[in-house]
Image 1 (tube, rainbow, N blue to C red):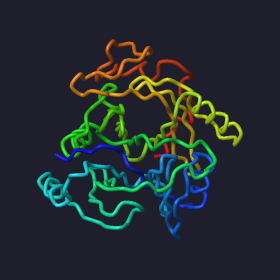
Image 2: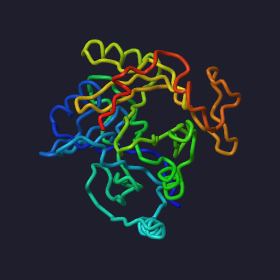
Image 3: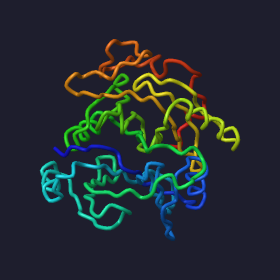
Image 4: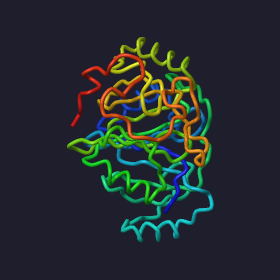
Length: 297
């Protein structure tokens, strides 16, 4: 098993590269690190790569990158993937600050890139917009979340943080409650991408920015159930749902097996569990709007 340590960046394909660059810099507040004819790289305020944009015929999340331990050996990881029936490829110099990565596809067709080395790519570059600390998690519609969750656990070392019924699973690779989510649906597509903010005041500033730019909030502010993050959701120019959040649950000690206690937890302590299917999506706040529930297909 390969032990993933954190989510690195996501690659989004888009038919309108210029519009998405403008959105991710002026609204999300990422810094445009480099621009090529058909792709661009953007960093968060911490100097870490957060988003790669690639020109394509239709919008989709094509790739997720994950950091593994520095002592991991690429040839050994490739052998472990082969033993699981997964074909991989070693690539070099394709991502700024990342000299090598191991690439393969997960069962739903998303490219996964594993890396051991990376460089800071600049901090606080004076970007406008929200200015998140990092890309926090990515959620996907899948036809059956159970085998996808088993793959991420068996092959990449993810742990299950929570289920809602049998249709929605949250998985972690470090202290954060989740880095990937899988939701049962008839089709495969990204459900949403989420960016972590500093605190609740930062989230309020983000809501003010949405108001200034006439960007509808399609859900929130709301404290969610599993993970207990305070969040708002909106849609980007490619009609994808984007979440900004703070106060996500933390599993600070795997041996203790419970999330760091918070006053809003109803379970004392809050442990990974299967939540009831109905009435658990949020602790407080408005219900999701029809625009949030609308699927792009």
